Image (cartoon, rainbow, N blue to C red):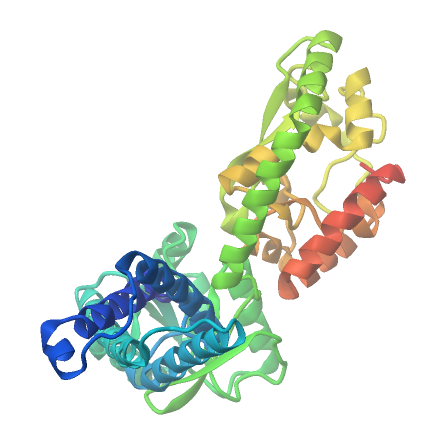
Length: 462
């Protein structure tokens, strides 16, 4: 999904609300204007204050109806496809309004206002989209908001695609690199620099005769570098759960999305995380205070620790926890590596770690040391549910394919934690987290959150 599409859809929500509200006010003005009143006298009483409240309520209803009608799906929009959608959406709002008036036996005073507001809403929404799309295309033509893309394939196969993007900036893409194959891309210094700086959004493969092993290497490369993959149809024998279909220069184009957690779903999850984290912080604040006092009086050092972890798309962030170790514990880690009990992957763990304080053992066994991560959730560096956050040193030792774990925000809890906690091998944990990434839903988040306290109470905690 292009960043411009996301911004456009977010912008359309308040714009549509204002346009529907404006249509309702315009209909009221025309009905009570002298010109209309002279032809059709006003024989009813409809105060402006009462009508204003009704117009506001209908405008709110319109946004929900429009969302159900697909107004705000996170895809590239074409004006020709918006016209029937606008007509259908506004008509559905009027149908709901008429049904409400009928079922509640409300005697609305003017059918003229309803019909005129219906026509004006369609007109205003269409004009609004024309203006927005023209502005979007203008920004694209000036080079603003374009998504960066690498194009791979034989020069003859990729030339028509590159030329199409070059001469049609309204498509929303800027080609920042052309390569014959993946090997050439991986050895190109400029490409490495762009990838390291997170300045590439997409990769397109134009060679439809790519071998299966090459195709899988390409898919893995995109997952590791957090790129969306586009390819000319009939490229892969393997299938993906999350694909979008379109066309470019007459070719059928397929885009593989790494996770359903995109677009509005990402917004829903963020709102869900923020509201629930804020609620938990409020009700758990007395426990926070008690734990802070106990940490302070049982050992020297600060109450909280800030630990470096790798988050979404490889960004380093500070993870907050109640301190459960002695001061300077991290500096002693190199000396402890020889005693690492995790030989199945990059993670580090010692069952009876001598750096852990007495009260720290209780905090860890009960997972109470992780409560401050609710502040991470509020800040947006973590989610309530997601893959386990790992240290930079651990991530640097990831085998190929495991960087897929960095495609979304890490979580306080996750599918791996409620399916076996620390008893899982790293490979099994990674498979569960990748399954979560590929099959995310709000319902799955709720199930994991409900299971987490039970797992902790069973003393399966780390």
